[in-house]
Image (cartoon, rainbow, N blue to C red):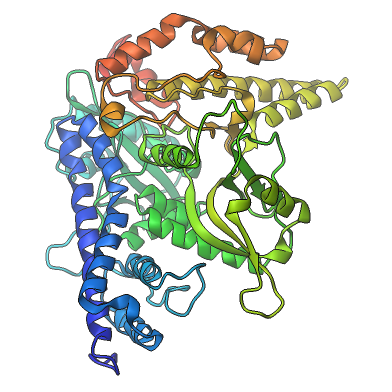
Length: 606
């Protein structure tokens, strides 16, 4: 279908060199991901964190290697455009039987734009749309693992099936009592199946690789019965005696959404066909965009590609304009949004007030640190883009003036094609999920409470909104501190509320001076002159009586120096904190305390 040679003797060789570069990248990526199993089995938590951080750098390193090779061997940047058209056709031919074609197309885009020095994202020499379908790709190599395994239990054999599901992962560390844990899983599942007739197709499908993150390994699958499908996940943890245990059973789309949240670190998963994993996960979480699933699997560049395609599609089917984002303006970042699109766009200002002692490079470094750090469900992941082009007529004039005033170096407006249609080009941009700023969320609750009058139900709802937000705010600070992240500016405006009511921090973490400092047991963060400290919590944050009452009920320990000292000592001792992407009340150790003993939760390595 695609000839070995076209007009240029170099076109096929360039395409082959590029696919070789991608194959090397994915081989290394997959090898590092598969090693997560051994690190989990040996409780090498610091090694797991280090590998998760280092794996993020793999892609850019392989792109640089590919660019260097193409320039050295083929003087690729000097090749005429006709040759690059031929290169792309040859590359498509090399992807016909490939197991990761969508990732390879993105790699082609990254290498090509580096070599051709193309600004913006629309040109004839990259994959603006996918050229090769990812439907029904399977690993057809001899003895290869399928994407998922299917089990066909009866009611009576359900416990034995759970044991077989876990045993099939061949974890080289003993369970404390797998039969007992399987019994708890069956009890949890029975709540979904007790009054249900088991249909002829009753089965459990489980992805063939475990999902590793922090100190946990997760079995991910779904129960199928008739036309109903119930997603589930089983977290496997170490207990204090060093043995394994199933900690709980998560059910339903909301629990899986929390597990795969954009505010959490990426999973380590061994996947030969990533598109098949994404398709399976989409069946569990149909509301979750594909780009966020690729991100959660550590394939951030593919996530960026899909996000941008979705974004361009949305722009074609909408007509509203970009505007200055509502809320209190930041001192360092200029934030704008498109009302119809659930993300915000952030660019670094050129000028900062004197109290913000920082630079553009420091701020970029802090964003990178957030991406590399375990975000423990409390820091938003960001997508980073350069040279992004928009149509000028989609911008409100006030927003253009705001950018001209505070970030002129990041703005370019031109009629590039000479057709009278101006483009706005933003030089460097961060994009993240839109959240309701916590100060606005609380103010809306206060206003609703005041306007409820004699409506007792409305007043109670407002009080509940305030309480849940303040409790979540304190939990967010505690989770961040436990992960060795000090949120220096703890004002309400620096936190956001997600659609599921989770409070997430979106200001900047202090920057470690080097890798050794960050990974040491020492507390590496510094203190700024305007940071909010425990002793200033009350005057700065607890002026409202309703807020103060809730805060003191649930988080009074945050006002005590002993809380902060205890975490400092724990971090200095090298202890890695357990991070639970679910409520602790869901844990079997709490549910079945009467069976396990009153202090059952202490069995877990916390």
